Amino acid sequence: MPDILSGEPMFPGIETAPAAAKAKRPAAPVKRGVSVKEVLTVAALVGAASWGAWVTKSIVDPARDEGRFVKLQLQGVITEYLQAQARSGSDERSAAAATTAFMGELDKAVASLGKSGKVVLVNEAVIGGDLPDVTEEVKKAVYAKVPMPKMAAAPVQQDMQAYLAANGSPAGPNAAQPVIGGAGGVAQ
Image (tube, rainbow, N blue to C red; front, side, top):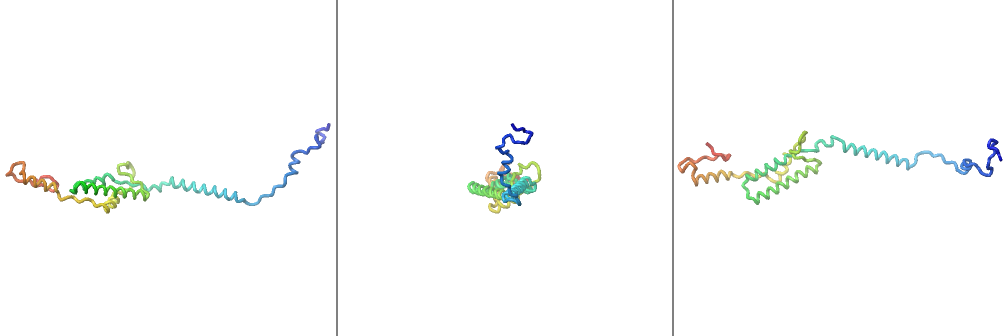
């Protein structure tokens, strides 16, 4: 039996595995330059990082919200119109039609603010902070299409004077008639 220390192979018919693998493997060509796949991978990574930075800046940017939120004294605008309509002396049908038209135009004016990128908050919803007030702009836009009702020529005053003239004053038929003032009160 051959000795391991003598340097003779134990199995002379079998080649050693590393030597056989070296002999059968062709030499790898030396790679020079950059492949198209590597360039596209780097470009995709740079593009994704840039897009992510842009989206983050767009979402977090505080200057983006400046001027975006506005307040509107909606209840005041509606109350002002309804009081003017009540004092106009219009019949119920025409008052209802005019009020419906007013509310439609008010809705359109507020919607146009929303379409322009503004977030409209009613005045009562604003607790703190200083937001621009767009109430006058909205009123101008609405009243340009639906005019503010005109006050009737004091029908209550005329009716009261006619009643007093026909029925006499409460103090008696010979008492002087009270003069009704412009505000509806009795002038003294």
